[in-house]
Image (tube, rainbow, N blue to C red; front, side, top):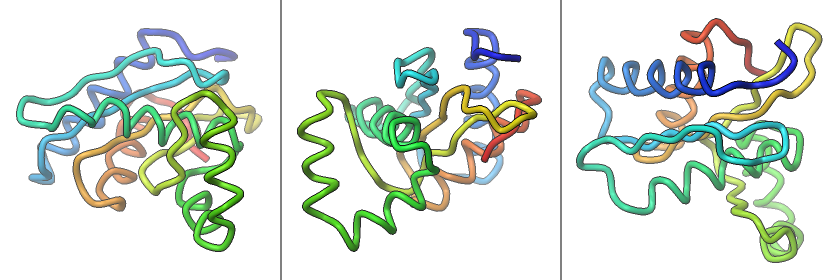
Length: 141
């Protein structure tokens, strides 16, 4: 697969939310963006707060934009807060460097997009998107 399509994105979202239910996590929102950071698919579970779309998309877009999983971005942002605040302002896109998004890659490691989640702890968010990517038969970085 050289690009991420709607079918794959929906499978990621469905797999992530299924994993969240199996683990008993709070209601979640999950977003999948393509390699340009554009939203392909998003679902917000019943009971998830209204900002879940913005947060999940912002995490995924930050991962794609910086070419790194959001856990690494959160660590960098802690040491360079002014730099990351500037990126968020200058990019004109949703940009949230917080744990909860991972890159989706092909067999050669080329970035196809990213999946981000919001609603649980950062670790829970990251866990469900990894599970969703794997459930869709894809790879994550």
